[in-house]
Image 1 (spheres, rainbow, N blue to C red):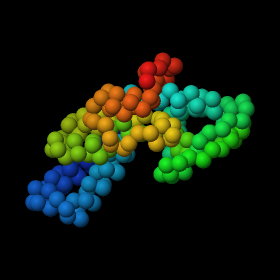
Image 2 (image 1 turned 90 degrees about the horizontal axis):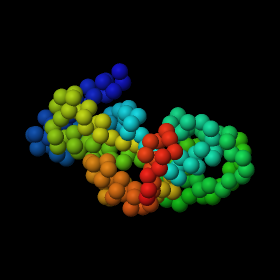
Image 3 (image 1 turned 90 degrees about the vertical axis):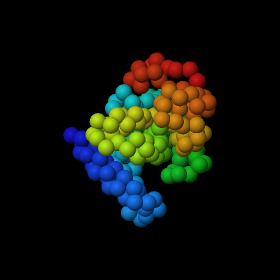
Image 4 (image 1 turned 45 degrees about the vertical axis):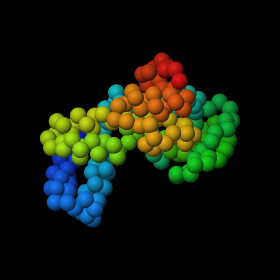
Length: 200
């Protein structure tokens, strides 16, 4: 399985990282390279479906645009507006731009998923990495426990621009939702596959 291979590679990289850092090489090029590889490996880990969430605004807009499942699209996937009944003005973002541009979408138009939606690591990857290092996770079970604490929330790009990358975030998912999402009036569906909503 993919996750098993990722956990094993993280275990090897963590051992190498800990050996290097124990010799006082905190700023070495090798240490930075291993940290980069660890970061990329963590991003490849397949997060449990129970840890995927969606904001009310993102899901409602998605459903008005397409009949496809939001969970089948990521990054620069092309989304077709096959459920749009009349022209709709939306705010699209390119790359890391902080300002969006208004565009009118028409029935059967298309757009890139990450121009309108963002997959937010509720607990930043950097925090997960630090937790792996600080807890000196050396066996596969410990590594899996920490990785399974990751959560992704699909939100609008304009919602993403309201929240900081690390400000108010902790390793506790519910605490981060309170500190970051609810503080910025971003509501989530209780179950992303139903219409049951939380309150902001």
